[in-house]
Length: 434
Image (cartoon, rainbow, N blue to C red; front, side):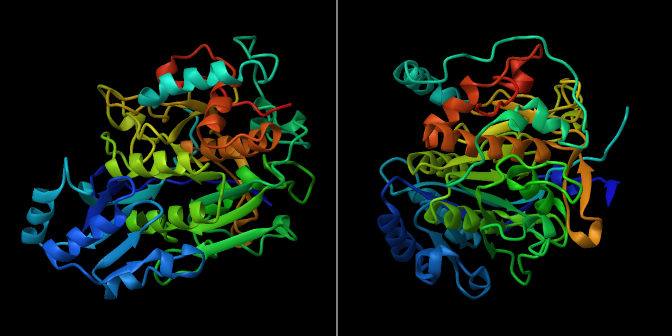
């Protein structure tokens, strides 16, 4: 039933790959005005609108027949532009225009690495302010810099659940909606029989069924339960699961697919979005930063993998990639069972928001995989750390009835400090509420 397995991010993920389309970010409450500019100045009028589809689940096949698509809740559009049209859009974007920015549509990948032996800078003042407001009603004790030890899987649970104290938490994530945007899920996996699962594929030509394994593994860590032998491997075992397939069975996807999944998750009132995907582009994306902020304002926290390319860039080491390097998206680094930094886990960058915000178990993480791949396996990656945090966020959302920026604060404030640089692990090891 169990195998040691691996995921390797394609080498091409290290390049800044683009699709030829562009992401247009509109200013707050300016989607209609921005659409008018695209229509009147550039003649772009045939845009599929996510709001026209049930549950805002855009049919991505529309991108091939239309000139692009608009996601009104996110406040962005994906458009096809030739060089002349791009120059015109760039000329009208900026101050005084309903169009905030235009950037290339990029390619993203699952963030995994082979098993081997061998920040919120702009929000910090707001976080400090929130801390002062809730300090009288917050948990009575802060998990400080205590003695940290090693952990191991056993018959009862995985080491990651022990390290994050999920095994002793009395909360289950019940009543909280968690969206996992990844390669889909094995909807026939026996461990999830009877669970509340809402699913949708945003990958043209592919259904939700996970032909890769990465998505099923992440869903299992965030929201799974126990394996067939009774070993617990999932954090929020009673959360409502939203599975958005935004990466193909080959493990890659376009910005437009990811945006479609985010629009769908936010419109469906998911309190947590888990994204174990990224690239190695060190500069942040205006689109993802704006979307992250708008998600927080809508009571939704986006959690994303910091990246696994630390060792692929020698000096300085590889830093947090997109979309996790946005100030409004919680970036997760990975640690091992000895509570040491995973060798692949990216460090904080110099740009605003390119910080590792928190850390979680990301080495030899046991979870579910499709039944035709053995049902269970262990993987490495900040991809594996991210759903730990997403599940723990669901527990805090249930325990303290907090959402958005306040939920972010609870995660940071209750984390355990580590004897590791904050540039690598942020506020420390994520901890479940007790």
